Length: 253
Ligand SMILES: *[C@@H]1O[C@H](CO)[C@@H](O)[C@H](O)[C@H]1NC(C)=O
Ligand SMILES: *[C@@H]1O[C@H](CO)[C@@H](O)[C@H](O)[C@H]1NC(C)=O
Image (cartoon, rainbow, N blue to C red; front, side, top):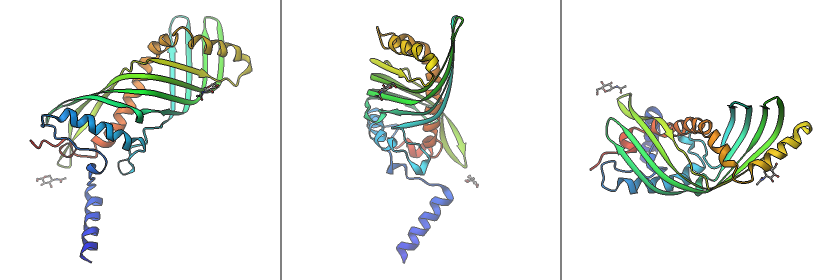
């Protein structure tokens, strides 16, 4: 009876105050400890396995595979204009990442975290509908796409500022930055439009030969980075705005 009452009371507390024991999901690190960076590297490494399936209680979506409902992209330079609507995008592979290092610079007023990682293979699939113009040549295509990237080496950079809510301080993540170095990339567009089939085939062959993908990667990186920043900030804040800063990164020592 007592246990039941205690249980009910705890449940009531957690419903009223939204208390979430983050330790259930993620290793918590003392932000003042001398080995906080090792602790965070381990926390992120173990955390990826948990985040892969998402954390329902916090509203964190599964990150491996990560599903992005849609993405609109536009590209212009002198000769080329292109528009592409992508949907049902799935990104596989994040959970096989290896966390190499972490660097935290944090106190009561600021939060800055860098995490170095490598990912052996990222596979992206989705549906697309696109339109492009090359000088006077117009082409329309739709179908599916996929892209396999290998040997990614990169650093996540997260920046946060404190925010008070109901007498608690949270650290709102304001920016998430990364610029992956990619070892190799192979991409394909399938095309349901017979009129442009040949051109898209040529495009596939072109992009997959002579490291031409590097050109595409460099040109499309700003678009991708804007997209990653939005996703990274949103996912990080599912945790950072729900768990008070002093529980997520307590200052114990
Ligand atoms: C915040 O703390 C003050 C002083 O301890 C208290 O009077 C107030 O009711 C608290 N507000 C909330 C929203 O908990
Ligand atoms: C990627 O797409 C191409 C063209 O549609 C297809 O032939 C290939 O099997 C796909 N690759 C994978 C790994 O699904």
